[in-house]
Length: 191
Image (cartoon, rainbow, N blue to C red; front, side):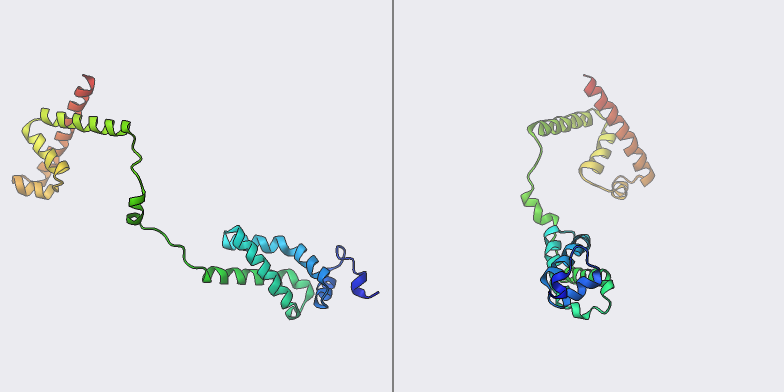
């Protein structure tokens, strides 16, 4: 019987396993994989964030490590050496991974449907009708101020230029007109 045949794999030291694996003992190689597979998988999964890709990397790491086991100077350092190989290979995989394609909003817009229900549409129509009724009940200056700012999208400076009033006056008119419209809307809802 040779030393390899008498080696109890579950009780063997790390140095004994590495030595046996170097001599070509498949069982010793399998035991090394079993002992360190969870660590390698954990590092790969943490680095890559994808389980299937981490499994693939895990296999590649062990193939590479067992192939280059002769480069390991200190058998007791097998865990740290394997960890370094895993990290390096995970980084290489991340760098070489094709970039994820993100879709621009204008690309996705045609695929997005209107999620509003007929009820939502009816509510919006009713609210718009109430706002228009409230605008009709306001005085001419209030109605013109709100219409210019909200419906035509004029700036305060444009409104000031068009009316000849200072910007501060336009701000005050807008503030007062909003308050009056809110009162009209409250009155309409109470009816």
